[in-house]
Length: 433
Ligand SMILES: [Ca+2]
Ligand SMILES: [Ca+2]
Ligand SMILES: [Ca+2]
Image (cartoon, rainbow, N blue to C red):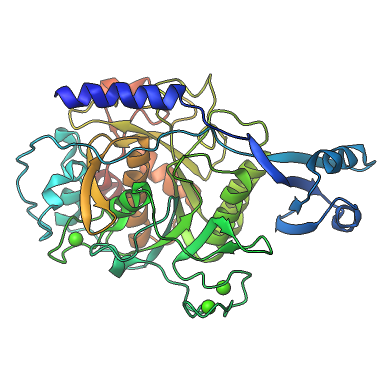
């Protein structure tokens, strides 16, 4: 267990102390909420105005401070926010593995499915995934699109290529926006980090870290293909949104654009294994989450964060936003404890899910363990997707309630989160059937 303490200390050091952020906000973008689009377009410092949703716009400018002053001086109701960046931080990375000797899965033929301990029953501290598949419940019917807003996905991975979402009306690699949605060659999703000359997000969603690919595999790696692991959900399409830089310092406008793209293209679940401790702006992000919930019926599943603290008193975003279609996830270990790093909060954290030492896909047909609420969130998102594909009439608020009401309550989690327990696929399906 020596490595684990070393890793713990390193992780702790990096996540608490490392602050590399060159600039806390985007130097050329402002978020504006206004009823008067013509007015903001007419301002001399507005180089380009793009509508986001409802009354929210992003204005591109070469002179941010002067535009900000002009906007705030207008005699009209207006909200102006800078496009804030999360603090740089080290995202979870592949860990050395303990020798596990876990038996092969009794249900899945995937050779490494038995290594995913969250598949175990509740009395063995898992989320009863295998038990749910072995039960005689109604099987998954509807394909559910799950958006992974993260560092991208290796869409060529042997255990992911068959479950990737693709844009049906976009011809890959021809340099043309075939479906005229404003994005050229957006095949597997969108890259909001690399923008063209017009400021539009681009189409290369390949993961250059390993975080997003790991998250993706937990949710939906191909089951029963005789290869690798099994994902939790049996009938999903994974949409890739490359929005989180490898340095973990994502921007509000990029997050909003990713949410809107995902929801408009049919994602009923969005996984957010990211977050930030400061939220100078953020009203736009909160309203975007509410908007996609009511307009598109999308559930946003978010990691509680890895600072070992109470996020009811020390807020973190998006986890601490009070949105009814936002489900916030803390992390547990294979012995049923809260993970040492996991944030908690009786109000702001909804439930727990396995997140320590999670085995999943990494780029280049590889597999590895990672730990973090980043891993707990996709465990919960995968379970949500499986429930939804069996009961597609559930709206995001009903789905969240169904999952929260049927958690496995344990003494260690009882005081740490709203539902007082760990998510459990068997229990949820058993309660609905
Ligand atoms: Ca397009
Ligand atoms: Ca194209
Ligand atoms: Ca597999």
